[in-house]
Image (cartoon, rainbow, N blue to C red; front, side, top):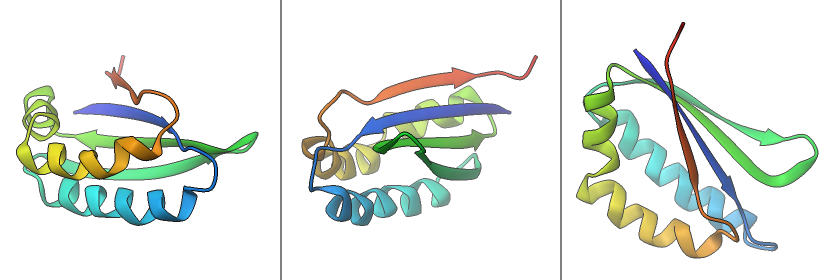
Length: 94
């Protein structure tokens, strides 16, 4: 199993629109082969900073989802709402 940390920073006044669209991305990820679970958190000191921690069966499963047409299409709607580039960190248990 791997964990994927996705960090996004939402542009001011776009929080509601972002939440709606990011929920659609998550719904598609849940249906993807290899997805185990995930949760989204809000930074206590910066309410526009979102962190999603997702558990995937393998790096190959994550890579398939990350490079999928489905994710790419949904991200076309999410990316314009961000004021910083999305950061992704792959985490392994030690």
